[in-house]
Structure formats: C-alpha cells, structure tokens
Image (cartoon, rainbow, N blue to C red; front, side):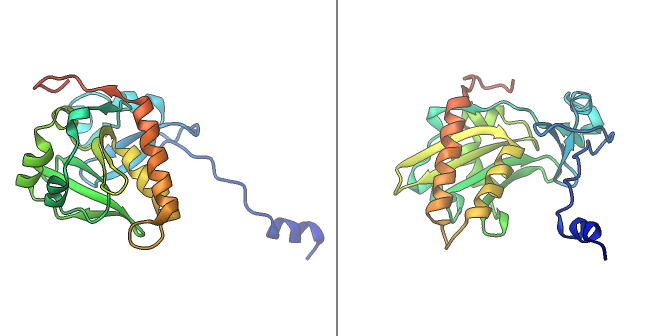
Length: 210
C-alpha cells in the first residue's frame, strides 16, 4: 500500500453534508424540523418544505413544521406536591400533546436519552393542563419544558419547540453521571434554562389558543 493510500485510510472521512429529508436540498447548520405525529419522529427540512407544512391541515395533519417561539409564564411554577404527583424521578421533564394518542406524553432525560414516564391525564390536567402555557401549546410540535429542583431552588416552566426539548436531553446524555446526572449535567441545565429566560416572551393571558 502506498503512503498516499495509507494516509487516506487513516484520515477521518469528511462529514456528509446534511440535506432536507423531504426534497434533498442542502441544509445549513441552523435549519427547521418537521414532526411526524404518526411515527413520533422529527425530520430535518429546508425553508421551503418548512413553509409548506407550516399551516393547519397541511400533510393531512400528520406532518407539521416545528415552530420557533419560546414563551414564559411566571405563574406556572410547581410546588413539591404537584411535582411528586407527576411522578418524574429527576428534576427536568417535558410534556407535549400527542395527537395520535389523544393524550399528553411526559418524557425526562436519562443516561439512555429521552425516557417516557407513565403520565395520568387527570394528574396532567390538574397540575399543568390549565396553565397559560398549556393552553397555547400546539400538539406534537411544542412542549412544556419544566425544571423543578428543590435543592437548587429552581422552579421554571417554558413553552418551547419540541426539538429544543429533545436537544436538551441529548446534551445531558453526553454529560450524565450517577442517578441525577451529576454536576456537569446540572450546569448544562442551568445554562440551557438561563438562555430560555433571555429568549422567551410572556405568554398571552387568554383562554383561547393563538
């Protein structure tokens, strides 16, 4: 084997350019996502395809572009009793309405990634379902991202794009140590929620959806 061939074998392969999963167009590093409600999955899409599915009824309701808004509401904090009722074993979780199942779904970060919790719809309705953020949440594509850490004195809740909630879970998986994630994971959580606080706008106080 020649020196040139050996060097090509040892050098890492160049990264494969990311493309839209619908039309195959090249994608920039920052791009939109589309939710498949039936498969409960996310696809990377270009701006054109994102606009195509960014309206009610597009894709027969199965496909919908993930929005980019972040909303906050200072009145959505949870006390210890309310958090315990949700049955989440760690201090961070996210919740979204699954249109295919017809009920809310709860997930939390773990060493294995996003882990689903058995959420009682009646408990959801009593604890979070009546909040301003829940009333504005779009099924399948937006989530309530909640932080409840008693020892840190943190009780925060934001309405976020569902892909952002999964992004946090992925970041925590890289740093997870022990049962509760360890100090590096907690530092990631703090930085993530601090960024949400800076970017969020107050949720409109209305009983209807936007």
